[in-house]
Image (tube, rainbow, N blue to C red):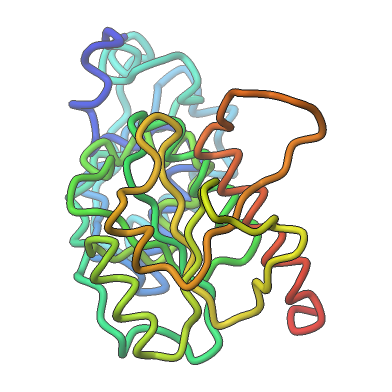
Length: 260
């Protein structure tokens, strides 16, 4: 088993069937240029994984990657934990293109994540945003996709299923506004409650990390600042993943007639 300090370096190893399925789904849909280079299956798990192995063998033939059976102890040494379930995939890197206005749907919901300092929190945010119907996520040039395997596992595969782009927040806001999107930024000062804010599509939402928040220059680009009201007096900040989930689902609620 890899040490905690080595986890970020294991970015191209995707552990568990959920992650492997997500990579394959993205390959089939053309969402990503990431490819599986080699699939590892624990020898002791082959019998229990017989049905899944049949499907994986078919996928391996379709996409041209080998399946290698290895002892469980060897797979444990390669991976970061014991939750791999006997399956892991060595994958190539993924190219994340720069944001282009032509990529944006006319009535879309785009989220910009800025300054999240933990790959697990980052993955949890992507999981919620995928579930609530975000069309794409924009990442800052420095992001956690270098630890793609960890992010994929913590996002339950959402990081591979979501279209991802790179831009700085100011650039993202201006590109979105040129396409007719309103730009909202999560914050406190001069803000309106998410209960009262117009969050109808097309919309670009900027969410920052709980420590640094959103940069002043990005806040200045927003059409409106939106806050999350608490149910009691509390001086702490929500995690970025929690904030993304709550705001994302408010977007879903306000646009629910268009999603039925």
